Length: 204
Image (cartoon, rainbow, N blue to C red; front, side):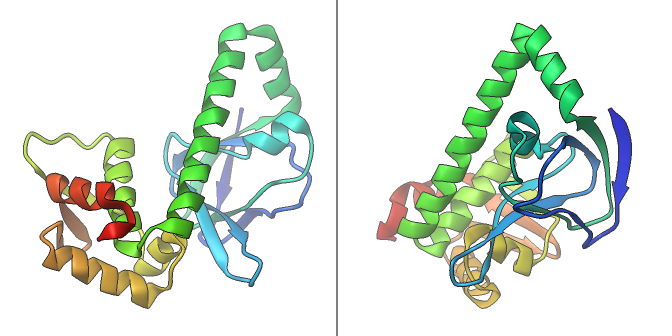
């Protein structure tokens, strides 16, 4: 793998381009997004340190399925398509891990689109907060967990498929319900209440 760096707001690759590399994030945050039919940007996922992106096009040699943009300054490691395919072909464990990773990514994407289509913003936000806590491995011995999302409300809006103003109103509602408490850039999450809202689906 070779080290690469990207500046904040730099486009790493665009949807439709031919892809030849897979990336592993070392520092920073990368947005993977698509444009909807009405021209709105929808953020599929953020790649954070330890996250991988660009693997689909590197595996099948076809076009990129999303646009990758550095939200902050990013340090990453790039693996060429030829090296990636050689490793997968020669190591069954890597091949199986790659399949499991792709399946997990596909399930996450399906759940995100289902949530946008079927559930209210409060539910989507609750699920996103809980998912982020699990993904970041936040340790907690109590029901109250501090979480620094590391993104603006505008970026948060892209992830849940809503406008910034609607996300702000949803955050205020979650505060009123006792699910979160905002303290500067930190969101203190009440796990039990968030789980109740997330499980409620579209009925809240």
